[in-house]
Image (cartoon, rainbow, N blue to C red; front, side, top):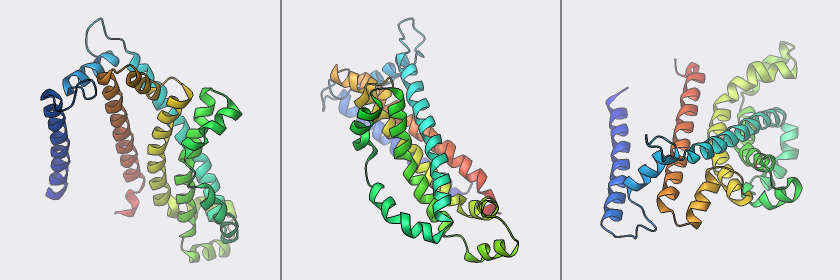
Length: 260
Protein backbone atom coordinates (compact mmCIF):
# COMPACT_ATOMS: atom_id res chain seq x y z
CA UNK A 1 0.00 0.00 0.00
CA UNK A 2 1.56 3.33 -1.06
CA UNK A 3 1.75 6.59 0.86
CA UNK A 4 -1.17 8.07 -1.07
CA UNK A 5 -3.47 5.26 0.05
CA UNK A 6 -2.40 5.80 3.67
CA UNK A 7 -3.14 9.51 3.35
CA UNK A 8 -6.57 8.81 1.88
CA UNK A 9 -7.41 6.45 4.75
CA UNK A 10 -6.20 8.93 7.35
CA UNK A 11 -8.19 11.68 5.65
CA UNK A 12 -11.40 9.63 5.68
CA UNK A 13 -10.93 8.81 9.36
CA UNK A 14 -10.26 12.49 10.06
CA UNK A 15 -13.49 13.56 8.37
CA UNK A 16 -15.46 10.98 10.38
CA UNK A 17 -13.89 12.13 13.65
CA UNK A 18 -14.60 15.76 12.79
CA UNK A 19 -18.28 14.97 12.20
CA UNK A 20 -18.51 13.09 15.51
CA UNK A 21 -16.80 16.01 17.27
CA UNK A 22 -19.27 18.46 15.74
CA UNK A 23 -22.13 16.20 16.84
CA UNK A 24 -20.69 16.08 20.38
CA UNK A 25 -20.33 19.87 20.58
CA UNK A 26 -23.80 20.55 19.13
CA UNK A 27 -25.55 18.17 21.52
CA UNK A 28 -23.58 18.94 24.69
CA UNK A 29 -23.58 22.71 24.14
CA UNK A 30 -27.35 22.72 23.66
CA UNK A 31 -27.30 24.04 20.10
CA UNK A 32 -30.02 21.49 19.36
CA UNK A 33 -32.42 20.10 21.94
CA UNK A 34 -31.48 16.62 23.14
CA UNK A 35 -35.06 15.61 22.47
CA UNK A 36 -34.09 15.71 18.79
CA UNK A 37 -30.29 15.33 18.91
CA UNK A 38 -28.93 13.04 21.64
CA UNK A 39 -25.31 13.09 22.66
CA UNK A 40 -22.91 10.55 21.15
CA UNK A 41 -22.51 9.04 24.62
CA UNK A 42 -26.24 8.44 24.97
CA UNK A 43 -26.43 7.00 21.46
CA UNK A 44 -23.52 4.67 22.12
CA UNK A 45 -25.07 3.56 25.42
CA UNK A 46 -28.39 2.82 23.69
CA UNK A 47 -26.54 0.91 20.99
CA UNK A 48 -24.71 -1.26 23.52
CA UNK A 49 -27.88 -1.84 25.52
CA UNK A 50 -29.90 -2.69 22.41
CA UNK A 51 -27.27 -5.18 21.28
CA UNK A 52 -27.01 -6.52 24.85
CA UNK A 53 -23.30 -5.64 24.97
CA UNK A 54 -23.42 -3.26 27.91
CA UNK A 55 -22.54 -5.97 30.43
CA UNK A 56 -25.52 -5.10 32.64
CA UNK A 57 -28.63 -7.12 33.35
CA UNK A 58 -30.77 -4.30 31.96
CA UNK A 59 -29.66 -4.84 28.36
CA UNK A 60 -32.71 -5.71 26.33
CA UNK A 61 -30.97 -7.13 23.26
CA UNK A 62 -34.00 -6.24 21.12
CA UNK A 63 -31.86 -4.30 18.66
CA UNK A 64 -29.85 -7.44 17.96
CA UNK A 65 -32.98 -9.33 16.90
CA UNK A 66 -34.11 -6.41 14.73
CA UNK A 67 -30.68 -6.29 13.12
CA UNK A 68 -30.71 -9.99 12.33
CA UNK A 69 -34.15 -9.66 10.72
CA UNK A 70 -33.11 -6.71 8.55
CA UNK A 71 -29.77 -8.20 7.52
CA UNK A 72 -31.41 -11.53 6.70
CA UNK A 73 -34.07 -9.82 4.60
CA UNK A 74 -31.42 -7.73 2.84
CA UNK A 75 -29.21 -10.72 2.01
CA UNK A 76 -32.10 -12.92 0.84
CA UNK A 77 -33.46 -10.19 -1.40
CA UNK A 78 -29.99 -9.39 -2.73
CA UNK A 79 -29.26 -13.02 -3.55
CA UNK A 80 -32.56 -13.39 -5.40
CA UNK A 81 -31.97 -10.12 -7.22
CA UNK A 82 -28.45 -11.16 -8.21
CA UNK A 83 -29.59 -14.57 -9.45
CA UNK A 84 -32.47 -13.35 -11.60
CA UNK A 85 -30.59 -10.22 -12.65
CA UNK A 86 -27.64 -12.19 -14.00
CA UNK A 87 -29.81 -14.83 -15.68
CA UNK A 88 -32.13 -12.34 -17.38
CA UNK A 89 -29.30 -9.95 -18.16
CA UNK A 90 -27.25 -12.68 -19.81
CA UNK A 91 -30.24 -13.83 -21.88
CA UNK A 92 -30.89 -10.26 -23.04
CA UNK A 93 -27.32 -9.06 -23.40
CA UNK A 94 -26.07 -11.96 -25.47
CA UNK A 95 -28.54 -11.25 -28.30
CA UNK A 96 -28.57 -7.86 -30.11
CA UNK A 97 -32.08 -8.56 -31.42
CA UNK A 98 -33.49 -9.27 -27.95
CA UNK A 99 -31.76 -6.14 -26.60
CA UNK A 100 -33.41 -4.02 -29.28
CA UNK A 101 -36.84 -5.44 -28.41
CA UNK A 102 -36.58 -5.35 -24.63
CA UNK A 103 -34.49 -2.22 -23.97
CA UNK A 104 -37.40 0.28 -24.20
CA UNK A 105 -39.42 -1.77 -21.72
CA UNK A 106 -36.47 -1.99 -19.33
CA UNK A 107 -35.95 1.76 -19.50
CA UNK A 108 -39.66 2.27 -18.75
CA UNK A 109 -39.72 0.02 -15.67
CA UNK A 110 -36.24 0.82 -14.32
CA UNK A 111 -36.98 4.33 -12.94
CA UNK A 112 -39.93 3.09 -10.88
CA UNK A 113 -38.92 3.30 -7.20
CA UNK A 114 -39.37 0.00 -5.40
CA UNK A 115 -40.92 1.74 -2.40
CA UNK A 116 -43.71 3.08 -4.64
CA UNK A 117 -44.66 -0.51 -5.43
CA UNK A 118 -45.17 -1.39 -1.77
CA UNK A 119 -48.93 -0.54 -1.77
CA UNK A 120 -49.40 -2.72 -4.86
CA UNK A 121 -47.37 -5.54 -3.30
CA UNK A 122 -49.41 -5.27 -0.09
CA UNK A 123 -52.66 -5.58 -2.04
CA UNK A 124 -51.33 -8.68 -3.85
CA UNK A 125 -49.37 -10.50 -1.12
CA UNK A 126 -50.76 -8.94 2.05
CA UNK A 127 -48.79 -7.76 5.07
CA UNK A 128 -46.24 -10.54 5.46
CA UNK A 129 -42.46 -11.01 5.25
CA UNK A 130 -42.75 -12.51 1.76
CA UNK A 131 -44.18 -9.27 0.45
CA UNK A 132 -41.22 -7.23 1.74
CA UNK A 133 -38.79 -9.82 0.37
CA UNK A 134 -40.41 -9.55 -3.07
CA UNK A 135 -40.11 -5.76 -3.10
CA UNK A 136 -36.49 -5.91 -1.91
CA UNK A 137 -35.58 -8.41 -4.63
CA UNK A 138 -37.44 -6.42 -7.29
CA UNK A 139 -35.80 -3.14 -6.36
CA UNK A 140 -32.30 -4.61 -6.10
CA UNK A 141 -32.55 -6.60 -9.33
CA UNK A 142 -32.34 -3.66 -11.73
CA UNK A 143 -28.71 -2.62 -11.14
CA UNK A 144 -27.61 -6.23 -11.61
CA UNK A 145 -29.82 -6.75 -14.66
CA UNK A 146 -28.75 -3.58 -16.46
CA UNK A 147 -25.08 -4.06 -15.57
CA UNK A 148 -25.21 -7.63 -16.88
CA UNK A 149 -26.84 -6.52 -20.12
CA UNK A 150 -24.18 -3.84 -20.57
CA UNK A 151 -21.39 -6.28 -19.73
CA UNK A 152 -22.50 -8.85 -22.28
CA UNK A 153 -23.20 -6.20 -24.91
CA UNK A 154 -19.65 -4.89 -24.50
CA UNK A 155 -17.99 -8.27 -25.09
CA UNK A 156 -15.55 -8.16 -28.00
CA UNK A 157 -17.49 -9.29 -31.14
CA UNK A 158 -14.52 -11.36 -32.30
CA UNK A 159 -15.01 -13.62 -29.30
CA UNK A 160 -18.43 -14.57 -30.66
CA UNK A 161 -16.81 -15.33 -34.02
CA UNK A 162 -14.22 -17.51 -32.31
CA UNK A 163 -16.99 -19.33 -30.42
CA UNK A 164 -18.84 -20.03 -33.66
CA UNK A 165 -15.65 -21.30 -35.31
CA UNK A 166 -15.08 -23.64 -32.36
CA UNK A 167 -18.66 -24.88 -32.54
CA UNK A 168 -19.47 -23.72 -29.00
CA UNK A 169 -23.09 -23.77 -27.90
CA UNK A 170 -24.78 -20.58 -26.70
CA UNK A 171 -24.59 -21.78 -23.09
CA UNK A 172 -20.88 -22.57 -23.42
CA UNK A 173 -20.20 -19.16 -24.94
CA UNK A 174 -22.02 -17.41 -22.10
CA UNK A 175 -20.20 -19.41 -19.42
CA UNK A 176 -16.68 -19.43 -20.87
CA UNK A 177 -16.45 -16.14 -22.72
CA UNK A 178 -19.36 -13.84 -21.99
CA UNK A 179 -19.53 -14.17 -18.22
CA UNK A 180 -15.79 -13.62 -17.48
CA UNK A 181 -15.74 -10.51 -19.68
CA UNK A 182 -18.95 -9.15 -18.15
CA UNK A 183 -17.91 -9.92 -14.57
CA UNK A 184 -16.59 -6.41 -13.73
CA UNK A 185 -19.93 -4.86 -14.70
CA UNK A 186 -21.89 -7.57 -12.89
CA UNK A 187 -19.96 -7.15 -9.64
CA UNK A 188 -20.36 -3.36 -9.79
CA UNK A 189 -24.11 -3.84 -10.22
CA UNK A 190 -24.21 -6.28 -7.32
CA UNK A 191 -22.49 -3.77 -5.02
CA UNK A 192 -25.08 -1.13 -5.89
CA UNK A 193 -27.87 -3.70 -5.51
CA UNK A 194 -26.73 -4.53 -1.98
CA UNK A 195 -27.16 -0.91 -0.91
CA UNK A 196 -30.59 -0.74 -2.54
CA UNK A 197 -31.60 -3.99 -0.83
CA UNK A 198 -30.79 -2.50 2.58
CA UNK A 199 -32.71 0.71 1.85
CA UNK A 200 -35.80 -1.05 0.51
CA UNK A 201 -35.76 -3.55 3.38
CA UNK A 202 -35.83 -0.73 5.93
CA UNK A 203 -38.57 1.18 4.09
CA UNK A 204 -40.60 -2.00 3.71
CA UNK A 205 -40.33 -2.72 7.43
CA UNK A 206 -41.55 0.79 8.21
CA UNK A 207 -44.53 0.70 5.87
CA UNK A 208 -45.54 -2.93 6.28
CA UNK A 209 -44.91 -3.11 10.06
CA UNK A 210 -42.48 -6.01 9.78
CA UNK A 211 -39.92 -6.80 12.46
CA UNK A 212 -36.59 -5.13 11.74
CA UNK A 213 -34.52 -2.00 12.16
CA UNK A 214 -36.96 0.01 10.06
CA UNK A 215 -39.78 -0.71 12.48
CA UNK A 216 -37.50 -0.09 15.50
CA UNK A 217 -36.43 3.31 14.15
CA UNK A 218 -40.01 4.29 13.36
CA UNK A 219 -41.26 3.32 16.84
CA UNK A 220 -38.36 5.17 18.50
CA UNK A 221 -39.18 8.31 16.49
CA UNK A 222 -42.85 8.15 17.46
CA UNK A 223 -41.94 7.76 21.13
CA UNK A 224 -39.32 10.57 20.98
CA UNK A 225 -36.57 8.16 22.07
CA UNK A 226 -33.84 10.07 20.27
CA UNK A 227 -30.94 7.97 21.52
CA UNK A 228 -32.62 4.74 20.34
CA UNK A 229 -33.44 6.40 17.02
CA UNK A 230 -29.84 7.45 16.43
CA UNK A 231 -28.57 4.07 17.60
CA UNK A 232 -30.63 2.42 14.87
CA UNK A 233 -29.37 4.89 12.27
CA UNK A 234 -25.75 4.33 13.31
CA UNK A 235 -26.30 0.59 13.12
CA UNK A 236 -27.72 0.90 9.61
CA UNK A 237 -24.65 2.87 8.58
CA UNK A 238 -22.37 0.20 10.02
CA UNK A 239 -24.28 -2.55 8.19
CA UNK A 240 -23.98 -0.67 4.91
CA UNK A 241 -20.28 0.04 5.43
CA UNK A 242 -19.34 -3.51 6.41
CA UNK A 243 -21.40 -5.17 3.67
CA UNK A 244 -19.94 -2.87 1.01
CA UNK A 245 -16.40 -3.46 2.30
CA UNK A 246 -16.87 -7.24 2.23
CA UNK A 247 -18.24 -7.15 -1.31
CA UNK A 248 -15.45 -4.82 -2.44
CA UNK A 249 -12.90 -7.29 -1.02
CA UNK A 250 -14.62 -10.19 -2.81
CA UNK A 251 -14.67 -8.16 -6.04
CA UNK A 252 -10.95 -7.45 -5.71
CA UNK A 253 -10.22 -11.14 -5.24
CA UNK A 254 -12.43 -12.27 -8.10
CA UNK A 255 -10.99 -9.72 -10.51
CA UNK A 256 -7.35 -10.05 -9.51
CA UNK A 257 -6.65 -11.60 -12.93
CA UNK A 258 -7.24 -8.16 -14.45
CA UNK A 259 -4.26 -6.72 -12.57
CA UNK A 260 -1.37 -9.15 -12.85
